[in-house]
Length: 215
Image (cartoon, rainbow, N blue to C red; front, side, top):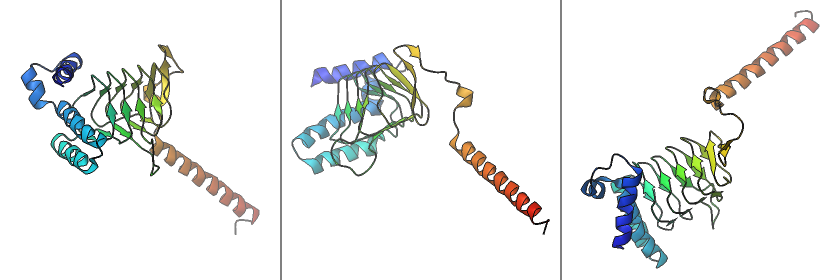
């Protein structure tokens, strides 16, 4: 147990240049506190003490702003940087050497039972605000961009950005061309479609008036 705790602290030093001392890390890093609380809650969950496990996870959520369901499975050297707003669902499986930033959701997509949350491979980085929802796998060594919404399988060694998430790099090779100044804006697209429909209706109305002699 103490070896794992030492490994958790060393992982923070490897991933966060702002970490200055063991004292600071142990007493001020919410992601570390949430991980340690989850290990306790997960132990009770596996023993089928479900209510006690949920109580522990809810206390952790209140103290850290990070919600990890006690049923989630988390590998080694897991690090949540900052962490506020992170949500990890019950059937989520997370591999080794995974890094999450604040606002990440690893969630489900409905009321179905069974496996309904994502499986995250090894050495995956999920950036701030990203939403990964559904029962599919994010492959090893993949990167999920800030605020991306990922709804389907991600192959290993891929970089995913956008809403919905799309692969822009795989195995070190760019897939298509990502133009940051031309990312889709669903609100603007909706207004454009509405304006197009209005213009078509006006043209049809003018045509009807012309056929009726302007009456």
